[in-house]
Length: 142
Image: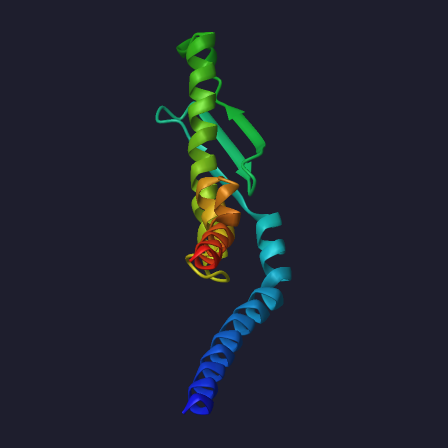
């Protein structure tokens, strides 16, 4: 009976390994595509009044900023600064959503990497490992 339980456990482990390895192969084979799509990604946003247009790249870096001529007579410097910042933030938020969608096609939804893309919290990268270590540490103490 112990041999049968061991075989069943081994089969379950093998199935889990095959699943994880399949996910890895899919991610690895799509890496070049992901990198190219991220390199090409540009997202624009426009202020509500249409005076400011910002374009950002995949990392949220400002690639282009266009100011309508009316901006100089309609806005004072403080208003213009706020409009630029808000428009860049809007474009960056849209970019983050697109990067998440792109990465979600290749990563499991509960992966640390995908959580990191969403929340920019480095703890997300290690959360699962931390949980495993806490569990393993707790089991040793018993």
